[in-house]
Amino acid sequence: MLDVMRSGSIAGVGVGASRREAAARLGEPDAWNGGGGVWSRRANLWMYGDLELHFGVEANGRSALWMIWCDYIPMPMRPSARLRVDPWVLREPPEHQRPQGEPRSVPSSRLLTALHDAGVPYDLIQNSRPYTDHRLEVVLASGGRFGIGSRGDDDPDQGDIVLFLQVAAPHSGPGR
Image (cartoon, rainbow, N blue to C red; front, side, top):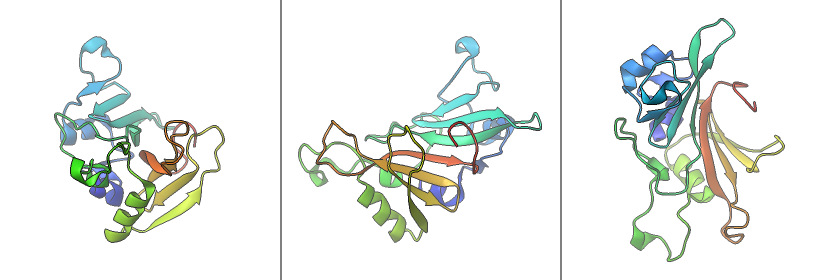
């Protein structure tokens, strides 16, 4: 996952890649939308474990990847059967290193420390979009970003945690 955050791509597949390029580099996804249970490259959503690749049609009519997304950050992150991605900081700590009763979530402080230790520059900004559940965003030069917020009623004393990760072209897709 650290490589994804540094480069903005998975195994060389990044925003703007065609479905053909994605299939050639990543192989068939674990799951996809549409197609009646039959794999089709025309599916708009390809899932590799908890990582989602979202395809859409650009203004020029060309089909392309517009976003890599994961909103299943609570641990453990479900791996892909076909695509091996090291979860990096999103890996669940060993049971003996996690305080008893601590939710299986990634604290924002753990993410920021890991980015700093890995030499990955980032900007921490306030989320200005209404009707979203995160209050901060960690924005990377690669186009990657993490949403930071709380789980609300689950555990108000837990503090801020990582809610999602996204790699997308600037101002692309729904909500941007």
